[in-house]
Image (cartoon, rainbow, N blue to C red; front, side, top):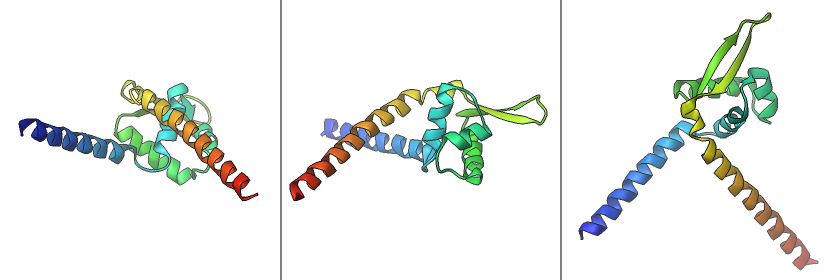
Length: 125
């Protein structure tokens, strides 16, 4: 009985932790932004080009959110005109393994779906 209670408690704690994580990383763009910044600091315009499909307004909103959660830092560069660069924090770097795992799963999933579509197309011929 006690072991069963611990399993339920462990499951509940994991679900809560996942919920907290998804709350911070929610949306379509945050993981892509984090993944980009794990490789190098980038200016706003570079991120806008790299994260395909994101609007400027959405990028600004997501960057502010990531900064509030201490995952990235914003640095105003002493240039003319003034430029802003974003970089991953040490805390944000803890997500690099997660972005790699998600990317690996995404590659495998894409291949699986594409090969499944090819099989379906070939069987209809």
